[in-house]
Length: 271
Image (cartoon, rainbow, N blue to C red; front, top):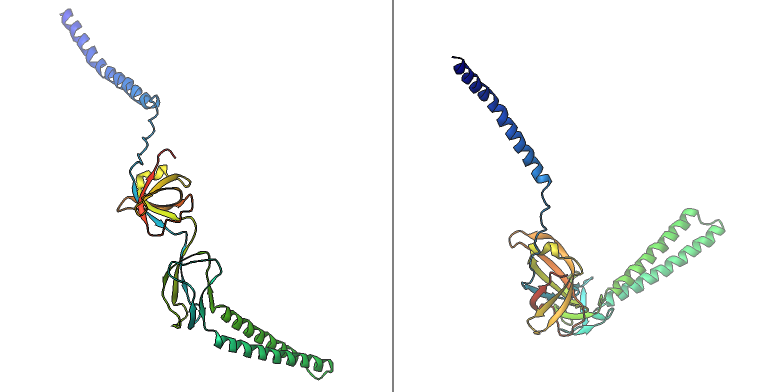
């Protein structure tokens, strides 16, 4: 009987101690799990994305613009020709300014008369025969006619349409003796200088691109390879093609390159 109760007591003790042993095991396991990440080694840096694949590129001019007529009038002479180079400040289109010349002569005559009237009023004021108001009105008339003279001189200056910078003529919209309206396009111009290159590159290259990076461009039309330097990176990625637009500048002047040529640009991960 005593042996039976001893076995029963021992079994009961084991049953009661089992949950505590399980909790201890779980606690030890939890401590070991929590300590795991703290002692883990830092993750290796992401692998460099290969940029060896060429992308299509477009050659563009250093600058382009369309000259428009600032005033309405008749064209006397177009001095520009298709593809012809020109220097900064050269007259490219001359408009007929006979009407503005006549208006300028009228404005100058009215200004002279207003000056005579003003001087007469000043002399009369000294003799107490003209009031301060009359003198002020005469001075205002002088200022108004002076502004008319300045306006007509400005209009005459607009009759000679000059080149904003050195470049070449890309397109002519008008001919000699045509009548034009204010704002009507006259010439398309391209600026001379170092050509630029535009390309759309994969957006995954973005982390490896920076202004100043060098790359090469093989142009289809010439068959030659040219060195360029990255200057601009667009601030938006095209979500459809997953590409980003970049622009670079040729490192040297190349007379054989023209805007509109295209080719393949190759970037290097070593930049």
